[in-house]
Image (tube, rainbow, N blue to C red; front, side):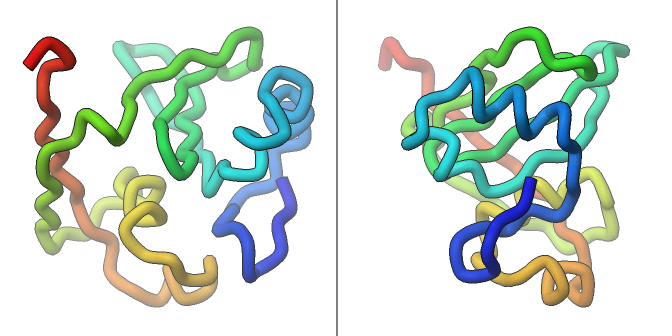
Length: 119
């Protein structure tokens, strides 16, 4: 997925995932995607996709896109200094910098505290 430096923070080129996202999301949602990375969820290899408003999950061979988290349910965010490569997707949300600048900085762990939709 290729973005201009001014618009996006994408770090990886995954043509299958990129074309899947173009086909299965509205243009508005697609343009708000900041970054995606591979991850493991309940012993299943998936992709986590971070947009301006939500976090999505998709299978490794993308077949469906499901919303994992909406940021409107986040009550507070706490950053802890730590070297953790798995936190880089969520770091993109916190920092609006280029991929080169992100790699130079230390990785951080992000703790999200959500509110129940019923409260």
